[in-house]
Structures are given as C-alpha cells and as structure tokens.
Image (cartoon, rainbow, N blue to C red):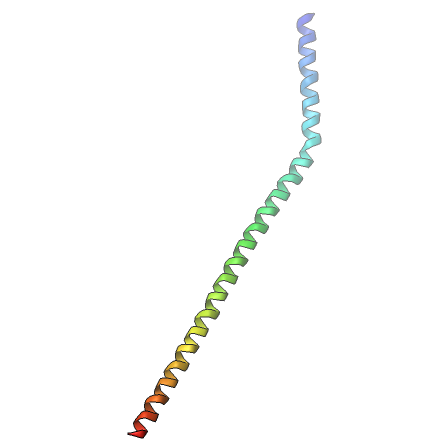
Amino acid sequence: MIGLNIELAKVSIEERQEEVRLRNKPLLTMSNARTTGFWQSQSALDSLQEAIKLYRELIVSRRLRSTESLAQTDSLEVKRDWRSRI
C-alpha cells in the first residue's frame, strides 16, 4: 500500500509539473519572440550605423578630392600668371 501511495504521489507531481509547463509555454514563446526581435533590431541598428559611417567617409573623401582639384586649378593659374609675366 505504501508503494502504491508513493507511485500515486509521483504521478500527481508529474501531472502538476506538466500543468505548470503548459501554463508557462506561452510565456516562454513570447519571451523567445521578444529576444529574437531584440537581436534582429540590434543587428539592423549595427548595419545602419556602419552605413552612416561609410557615408560620412565618402563625403570626406569627396570633399578632399574637391579641395585637391581646386588646389591644382589654383596652381595652374599661378603658373600661367607667372609665365605670362616673364
């Protein structure tokens, strides 16, 4: 009889554990979805920050080339003026 009561108690505990697991399953699913959403958002943010960084580097590079081009133009004008004075 004692063995039967022990088995009955084990089955009762297992049933309650299963009830808790089933009750918590939607919470876990929701938590996993939020975690996945967080990491997807973080990845998108990282990509956007990298794109902004590259865009800024492009702007600086274009400005530098533009400045170099103006310097060459000024240099040619100075040389032309100097030659015309000789």
